[in-house]
Length: 246
Length: 333
Ligand SMILES: Nc1ncnc2c1ncn2[C@@H]1O[C@H](COP(=O)(O)OP(=O)(O)OP(=O)(O)O)[C@@H](O)[C@H]1O
Ligand SMILES: [Mg+2]
Image 1 (cartoon, rainbow over the protein chains, first blue to last red):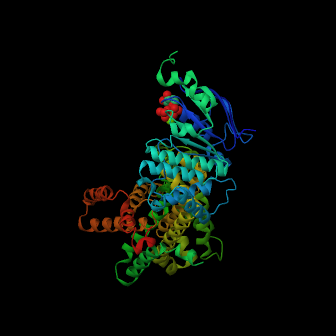
Image 2: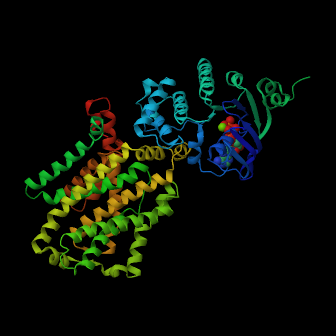
Image 3: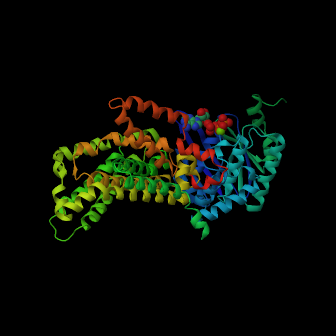
């Protein structure tokens, strides 16, 4: 049984079809890269999975439960954590408090106390190495630090599925390698399925992924093990704008 | 256990300010009137802060909760005055009724308006107080536009002397207690999940939802709590202090505006802010009216604008930032 299953999901904004009949499956602990150029519908797909938008067609099944129309706040505790393409910290709250919010509200039992949450936050802060920023208002972090904080905030939710929207954008290549290794490690140790969205075929991200899904103008055009996906002529066409030369 | 106590340290400056006010009022002759006014503004700020400050939502109809609380107390006194032997109990019943009525009204308003976001919420609440006033006047509820006057009943129940000391002294003490209680509840919320949820939704409502926060639930909690305190302030400052109630007076949007100014001046969402805001606002208003009668608004408005521009986080917000690495930090939030 897959962890997440999308069946024929379509999301439109007025006349624009941002996500067009997309079906896909993600297994427990899998690391998946979703690649697609600007405006191909990656963020919208995340928004449909995390409940920010409801799709016009199709269904979203998580852990055998139909969550297509479930409000977002009920999805998080089931085990869906995410980060945002443009970081969305709770700016006036400290890094520690931000992460504690994840533990407090994003876990299934719903019974994690404030003190326990703060403890979990401290542990998570160490894992992402944000110790020196612990008590700063999250709004004052650099964009890269904010992304790290968002990952920590999502991890504190003990998710089964972690959706990362361009989490590595703007990072130094060395940091990206480290980050990807860290995420890969989490995926293995805690059996968290990771879906990482990237605009370009980022070597580091895609290289780690077991499977690559390519979106183009809202439709899924490729869904295959990484090596195969990268050699697919459709992918080359999307990124180079012409079919590969014979 | 020790940790539990240190959590409540930030109440010390708040309570100290109230104690100081009380002492000044008691010991310096002629000051009680000013102190009473300051207590009213502090209580109003403290009450409104629980909603405006903690959620970031602006409720322009807020005064309606004070008005309805005033009616709660007024109704208890006018309708139950004939029952023998109630004595001071009638005031307790009045408070209960004030709480009940402001809760009901806030549930009704909240259920509709809190579905709206940000500015849309603010716009939707603009007419609430006026609407309620017209309802009372038009449908002749609770004696319609003639209002309720219950000085005679108070004199009868409590005796002339006790009634008079209630109006000129004990009502103000009750306002002080309500303000202190509101501060306590504010801090309790801040330290609990409710506070974390409210901060999150104030900063970014969509992100808060995705983090598992039932934002509607927490907004309603803050709204009802804030409305209840407004009801208590109305029941005390407006019904007990001046034993009559007329719809145009208690549904006057002017008080909502004052409450907004106090919260913003002091620092929205901070614990000490409403005290600072209430004092700055009340003192300036009082003395400007004495020294520059007629011109007070002309001077007052720019002062308020300057303070808010200089300290967008409010006076306490600024203090908090300045003192964040000092020993005082844990007292000022
Ligand atoms: N709330 C919205 N209202 C209207 N149109 C939207 C909305 N959100 C997204 N879109 C449109 O849907 C399409 C897909 O956008 P989406 O943000 O999902 O793409 P993306 O793959 O994440 O792109 P990027 O690489 O720029 O992040 C775009 O044409 C975008 O303009
Ligand atoms: Mg995007």
